[in-house]
Length: 430
Image (cartoon, rainbow, N blue to C red):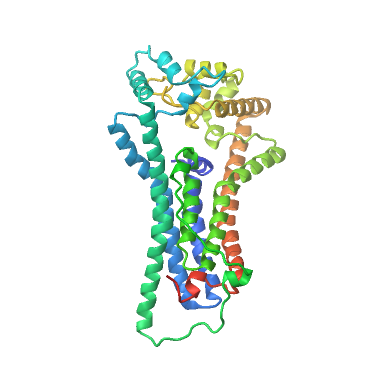
């Protein structure tokens, strides 16, 4: 795996790779250190407990959060295959059949178009479509169960099982320490509860049934849904109200900084790069650094769909699967070709996304051709794009790993009058 492919992977905010880098290698170590440092301001003993709890919380949660969904989906996919269905079939194809003006793909359309082709892999794909067409309701139920299982199981483990186990370990270790030393009153200054601080008595409840809500959401929302469920779990399993409010504060901030902020940072950096360096950096660095593409631009042989009309795009990707445009689109996940070179009829092509890719692809080709030095232009564009991706990782990681934890403890200090973790600072932890 090349450095460019690694940067490309961590720059794709629709995958788990940016989350993996930020969560495991930057965010978790920083949060553990900050938790220890803030608690050390008042108590070394509680700082030790906070460090251990945060280590278990961060790394065990990350393992379940990042790995739970794909592992669960693979297990459920095996069950779906045993039922005779292919989980690769996209249900959006049913919707495409009913959409006005978009008669270039769909279950009925694809069966008719690809059904007459003799290639073995195409015939297998068409058979998958026919099977699901005749059993749509059963297939939908299986996919709903798959989505629910992949989302709920990791969420329950992270939000409702792991925290109580973590707290139980702290209680056990504290009891062992207390058995070996005289009981002392560690706190001389009473700390106000959140209710006393605000003058309001607020009760937390958790564990609401979310199955019916998540069943109809898209796959791209799974990580965010898990984080939302994790927030509910963390709040509802908190040891006291102060800890519940602090968990709500940090988990809400984490959702925003993980799933919303990076996309806006990326857009801002790319827009700034266009103004400062006069280069188009919308495309992925893997495409910007494609030597075959650069040579084709120099030779003036790059083929691209003439416009963004549906008919033009589908005719092009179906008739010219080996073109640089079609192969680049496949590499970026815009479409999928079978081994025979025929477009996979089971996959749904997001026309809006493909149209946007065509526009960015064409713009880069034209700008490179007009630059006077195509190779230098491409190298510059690739370097700027790679820098933007790394800068995005750096900025979003700083916000998650430093700014949010610091704000969390300032919030805690304002609410409770102490920097100590609320769940550890009181002896009435459950």
